[in-house]
Image (cartoon, rainbow, N blue to C red; front, side):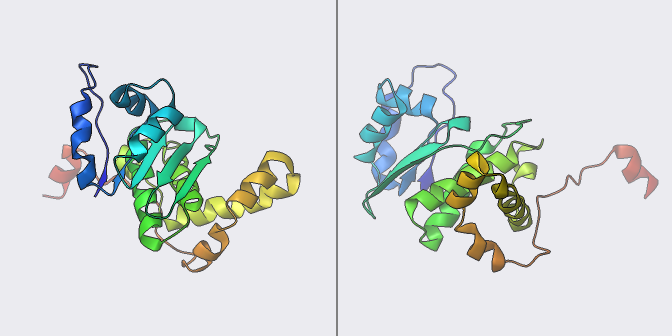
Length: 196
């Protein structure tokens, strides 16, 4: 089970919520939630506290990336976020979690799982719509082609292409007409009435 927590509107952040962590494989709070529930003053300290309670502890930090500790593999990793024009953060944490689940099920190294999850999340926040903004393999392949093309400029673009180089084999295995993000299918009542 990959678990997260919702925002605590009371802002009491009852640590008793963490009592169920031994029943989970992974816990993926954002940095504010992680620090509040663990009563720590940094994302790093929160991750250390959570690492002893769940095999895969992940703390996301928005545009600043994510960090994790995987007791089942002995790995720890921290990765930077991707700088994008964020339009709507709705569902970004859920999309990040889906990326982590994908990478974990595929047996990828922890750093690659974090990078992939950060990429998925970064692609999602550039669109409106929560789950409708979640990228498909086609979107990931398009991003990777653009990242490779931009890497010739050197600097940050070259570093991004180097870090995400593991995508080359992944997107090669996917069809070029792979699924892209979903499109809204809701319409107006007048459209329904017109076809009745």
